[in-house]
Image (cartoon, rainbow, N blue to C red; front, top):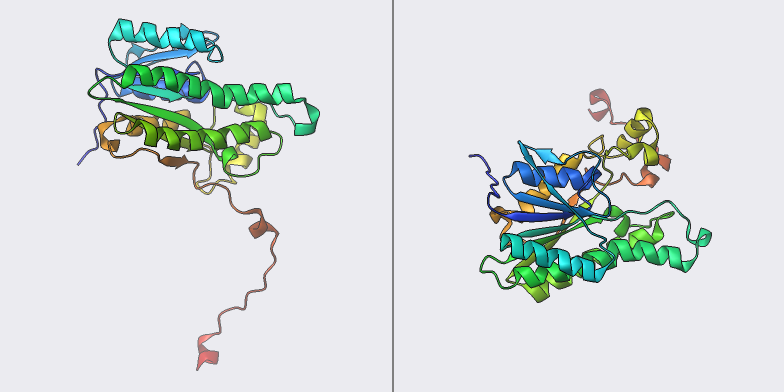
Length: 268
């Protein structure tokens, strides 16, 4: 029995959907039949397309609440519906806490926590009055579940995002479902900035139990599932898409002399 995830006739918004993980998510929704709107400050280098269909780009600064509200209002007027919002936009440079002032760290929090809240509030106003309700997905990170040296403000924002989603899920049920997709490392076109050349990417991937980094399309497939009717009873949940997580460092450092099994002769 096949699992069919058909989102035909539905409208999905993917923030930061112009490249990387966001583009992978947008393409997955296009393949599932959804109409897709992507938004960011700058347009994509090339159209984001899949299955002979193309996502429509809208220039929006997600840190500008009036602009965000206007964007969702225009979408609702043009389409008469909004079925799914994927809060994907975010990111951070590598910066130790003591190497920058609070204003720079606050900008990271603004993009990765406040902006998704702003977009979710605007989307909720469109979704809440519809019989079918809607679905909001937060793109989280394992950085929000463990220490995140060099990206501490980002990790704090992602931890807050997961908690925010759980509260939204309670407050907005049953009309709107809210879930978080918690990502590990993903092989995007910008992976070299974080992990080096292909040898570096492979070496980093080898630390993951599944032996590699995720592909953006795999993140997209997880999002399509959570947006589909097959996930109708999932809300307030965190779906880990991290290939098994990280092998504990102490396992590599430990030296344990384990006794060998006795031979059959000695057992007798």
